Amino acid sequence: MDIESFRAYCLSLPGTTEGMKWDHLCFMIEEKIYVIIAIDEGTRFSIKCNPEDFDALTARDGIGQAYHLAKRQWIQVENLDVLTDKELKSRVADSRAMVLAKLPKKTQAKYL
Image (cartoon, rainbow, N blue to C red; front, top):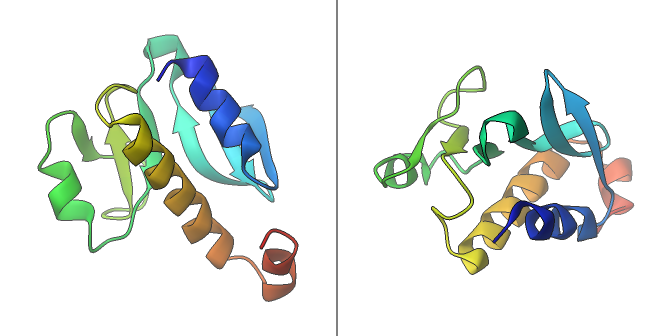
């Protein structure tokens, strides 16, 4: 998947907005980040992950603990080619769902 297809997919998810934070492109729901990409450094990105999946994910080539983000809850993926398109979309959707689940129930209801 290329960066434009990735961007289009993220923006297709209900309630998603994009913006720049810390010189990184971010995809957010209700101003809460669920994907952050270092676009000036290729397509390295970080997403939230289920802590139960963390060890298996970080054992894979091209995936590690995300810097400056909650330990064992965020992974950093070296580029968009590390994951298949199907898995990439699934992981992004899961990241969004985990962030959305932390918002108030009334806010969650707008996007379900």
